[in-house]
Length: 62
Image (cartoon, rainbow, N blue to C red; front, side, top):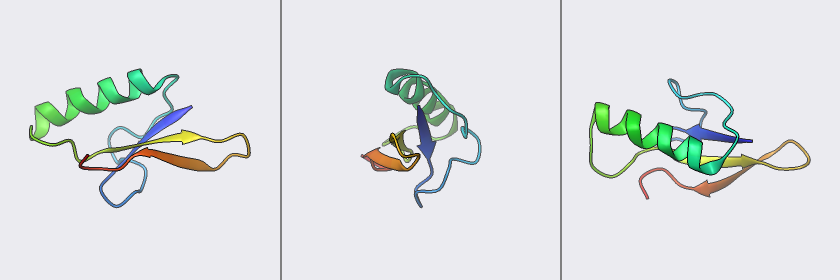
């Protein structure tokens, strides 16, 4: 499972849900971001590990 995080690395306040794929999560992030601001995407992406922790795949603003 994947989730989106805000610039502080916390679950995103609007897009806080579980996504089945990295592509689905990033598509949701980019669509929302373009509607709000445009420019570099200030949303990060994390993946759930086998032990239930979250690992950062993309830092906000990259």
